[in-house]
Image (cartoon, rainbow, N blue to C red; front, side, top):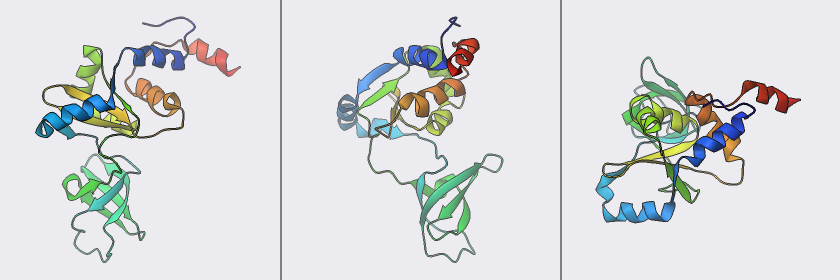
Length: 183
């Protein structure tokens, strides 16, 4: 779908326009009808505020809150810097992400409009990548996946949509147009 002269921003806009935009109020009403059908599946990512249930053996800190620093994929463990500066290594089920709200701050949520994107989300580490690009991801057994942005007042394309476009591996843009735009 390469379009001659289209920048990466323009390509990301074309892609995002294919998504289903859903008012968050509609999602909230669906959640109220059957709360057990919904769950947040956002993956832990760097800079998340977390609360550790039980500190690892040998940790002398009294602090249980901190910030996720990195994920060791080989060992499937997480390095967390506690608020007092102590670093600990824990597994995914030993902490929870602390969020300010039940749903993302922005009033619109999305689902993919194309089955190829949905396949990528479900089968090819899409939830992890969406999370790393700053989206919160929810799953409904009945309605599928929805994602939203937990932020406001900045350029969503620069901070979320373009990084997601790149991480998705899309190449609808013309690299020459990118060079032309820089000059």
